[in-house]
Length: 433
Ligand code: UDX
Image 1 (spheres, rainbow, N blue to C red):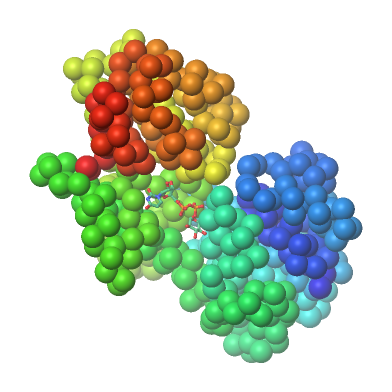
Image 2 (cartoon, rainbow, N blue to C red):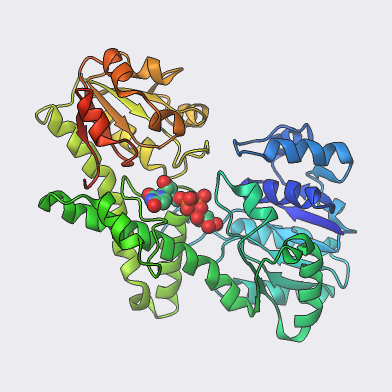
């Protein structure tokens, strides 16, 4: 099929390359000239395992192209809208300016009978509003939220664990058939698909992210209780996780969630619920957010306490800057936040991350960045692990002890084995254990 993808950021670039890998003809469009030049040259604008391979294969096959010229979408049968919906500067709601601009830009080029498919995370009610704008062109609109996880974006796009189509009642069968053809490979592989209305499709996305955020903050709340009772939250998570109704995944206590989705999505959802007169229904999301942000400060406090309340001038190695491993994304990263807060208190912070240093340096040039974990660790008086990259999880406690000047480690992700580290002479502090 001939597809276009409007917006070549994280979501769009992966979607475009993944759709080409499935055999579709895809043109990706973005207003960012530098980004399009990079993608067209086969360079990935961010770190994502597997993306470079499908990008170069797509470009090589002639099935994938990138342009800043919106008229290139004219012969596409399906147009995916994959632009960002960041948090508004003036508050917690979503900024829809990129979605609106994408639809405005598309409208003059829409062929009658083509399908515009929104993938961006939007406040419930947006799809119905956009459908009214698209309608006069003879094209139709569907909403097909994306659930990809960074670090697994390619596999999540090619083989999602479910497909959700929000369609207009009048064209339900037609639109379903078009989307089934786009996702034929996943459907043949048995991927469940839910065909529903616009509002449900929009809500599925924010409900899923709210649930995941709540799960993380729940276990972090238990970590707060564990800290004052001497309990171990990781064993607690293992034990409750054996209950299949609860499940062990997303019950890792630590410095909490960050990234470009969960924090902004729960805030935007709370703001939208407020507009709908139902703020009370999701008032708990405010607490989910608060618990989450408290854990960052808790880790900073633990480090400061280890220096008897005065971290000024002490050398602290911060391992990790990305909001999670296998990503160079630093948006709302708890790791970077912890590094910045310690630096703000006068600590001599030396940070390391296998992928995120260039992004972090651009945003926080005042921080010091080491070229390797070893360089960061050398002479450190405290080690703070904040992103659980494999390289850090596999650190040898004996070899690491030989590098530092004071063997004190703070495990912000509960990723290390306290028994082994303590046996090697370390003072080990986890989060809620
Ligand atoms: C998330 C959703 O998982 C995905 O379905 C949605 O489409 C976009 O948002 P992503 O932001 O890539 O994906 O990251 P995710 O793996 O969900 O992790 C989010 C944050 O939660 C990270 O900072 C991670 O470190 C943290 N986290 C995750 C925990 O603190 N504990 C956990 O148990 C799991």
